[in-house]
Amino acid sequence: MASAIDFYFDFSSPYGYFASTRIDALVAKYQREVKWHPILLGVVFQTTGSAPLTAIPLKGNYSLLDFERTARFHRIPYNRPETFPVSTQAAARGLLWLRATAGEAKAAEFGKAVYQAYFVDGVDIGNSANVAQIGAGIGVNAAALQAAIGTPEIKEQLKREVAQSIDRGVFGSPFLIVDDEPFWGFDRFDQLEATLKNGKI
Amino acid sequence: MASAIDFYFDFSSPYGYFASTRIDALVAKYQREVKWHPILLGVVFQTTGSAPLTAIPLKGNYSLLDFERTARFHRIPYNRPETFPVSTQAAARGLLWLRATAGEAKAAEFGKAVYQAYFVDGVDIGNSANVAQIGAGIGVNAAALQAAIGTPEIKEQLKREVAQSIDRGVFGSPFLIVDDEPFWGFDRFDQLEATLKNGKI
Image 1 (cartoon, rainbow over the protein chains, first blue to last red):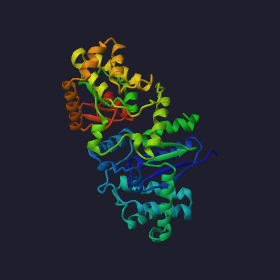
Image 2: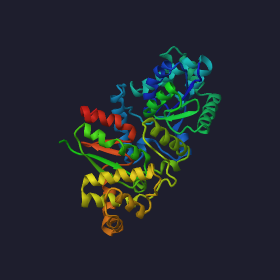
Image 3: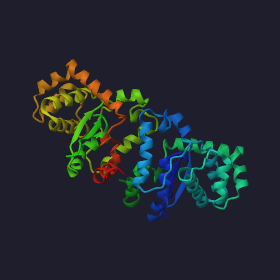
Image 4: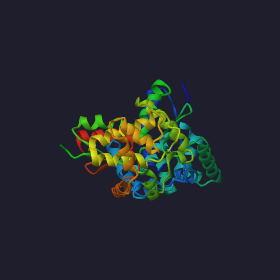
């Protein structure tokens, strides 16, 4: 099997969420696997000098419209979260812990469940108890997950992984790397698929 | 005929150039017309706090790759200009003068010719003599065009039009407005076309 696709995302990114609803079907079609990498855009933005989309004059209002129109266009369920953006450390740490203790497939299942909770079901994923409950919904021990989220080890691991993603050139969400070729944005899934199908464009 | 589509762009924007190669066929298909609005991203960025793509850490390198890959993906001729970004005042003023003196169709023809000169033929469009020569190539009096570019009236008009575009929420290039619905980016042409075909998404 060809190498896995690296899927970088922030849990508060609507376009990352859209990507999360399509990535499994896409990689399955081309006999690939996907590795989920939660990042923290707040940290990335310290490198790029950027800010959350919705905080940028003019672009902010447009973005709110584009999130909703893009969801309708692609027929993806989407309900604008009340709190946006939200702190995503707890969810990101939870995913890293699950990857280490339960494997990549469970980590991916958790990633999709967190996105669905935040962008469809209105759950505040900034709250670690809520994140633990999302884990419980897919058969994870909620108490163990919540405890893990608070350990210094997992905090350090997330910092390290975010730094590594920046070293790799990741600056937004979603950001996908296929055989060293980077793709930024849900709106590059057409080019991503063409690359999976035919090789480098 | 339904109302014209407003097409905002900066002459140094690769994605604006890509849009310029597709906008005519798109609007013709849906019995629309298009009005070309040159803007100055440098002025817009003072409002949004942004910077030229290629000047942003990490995003800059990616953008250079994305310009070329997007051109290949859509089979659009593209040669990376030596000077990038470039000052686009002269070309923008020329387009406004042509619109006033020769009509919208000539202005659009000029717009496409400037983009082609810059992104395909390697012409430095920051130079007003070169801009006048591009005009000559489509039958415009080069001396009259070059003189017009330097008048206080046309300078004021461009300032006014850029301010109006910002008032309308324009913050990037290309930026298209169809019946008050905004679309930012060449990668929203799919949503733009769906809207022209079926009405609001």
